[in-house]
Each structure stands twice: as structure tokens, then as C-alpha cells.
Amino acid sequence: MKNWMALTALFTLMGCSNKADYVRPNYEAFIAENQLKSVSRIQHFRMVRWESLDDRYFILNASKNRDYLIQLMGFCQDLSYALTLKLNQSMGMSLQSKFDSITHDRYPGRSCGIRNIYELTPEQKKALTQRNQVKGSVEVEKGG
Image 1 (cartoon, rainbow, N blue to C red):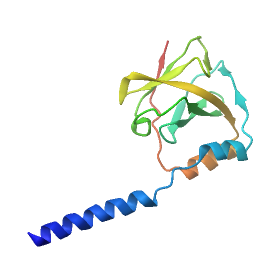
Image 2 (image 1 turned 180 degrees about the vertical axis):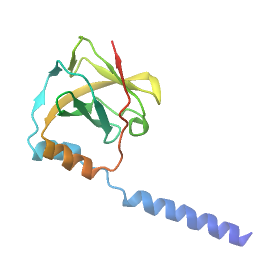
Image 3 (image 1 turned 60 degrees about the horizontal axis):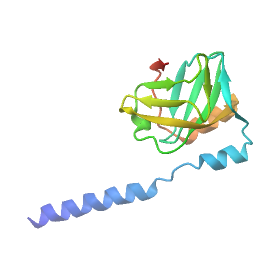
């Protein structure tokens, strides 16, 4: 019985120490340091793939190798674990900040509003994806 309690305490402490080692990347600082340009909309695009950075940010790859950092209006639960991303667009072939939103397969009934859209250079995208090891899926659904 004592061995069981000792093992339980050891695993609990190990779990706590792993959580303490994790530092959430500061994407706001990255935006400021790199002077990312905010755009109000992406026009005439087709989403090719996306990568989750955390539950507030993701990278959207549009046609012609154009990449954008998307900042959501708040916490979008389990976005990091989603397999399918659906764009809820107010206008046909464009994605607009403040008006459009996303949903994903983990919580399909919950909409997450888009706060800001930032253009990314290939170097900036590489820097962001190297900071974060969680990769999203390439499966895409387009909503209307």
C-alpha cells in the first residue's frame, strides 16, 4: 500500500514539473518584433492548409503560397487538436477580420471570431512553426 501511494505521489509530481516547464509562446511579441502588417481581409483565395499554433492563433496557407497568421477574438477550445477547420465567411471569396469566424471538428457548434489577419513572409512562417511543434491538419472544409 505504501508503494502504491509513493508511486502516485511521484507521478503527480512528475506531471506538475512537466507543466511548469512549458512556456506559452508570446505571439503578440512576435507580431510587434516583426512589425507584421495587419490586413482587414484576404481576397480571392482558396485555403490550401492550416497549422494550429495554439487555441488563439493559427497559420492559414492561401493559394499561391501566401501565408497569414490568424488571431482569434478569444480562446477557441481544442483548436490545437482539431483535424478539420471550417471558414464561416460573410462574403464569397474573401476572409475578413472582425466579421468572419471559424469552427472546427472538436466543437462544431462553437464559432470562433477572427480578430486580426497578418501577412507572413516565408521566413516569418518558418520562425513561427519552429517555435511551436503542434501541427494542424491539411483537411479543409469551406463554409458559406
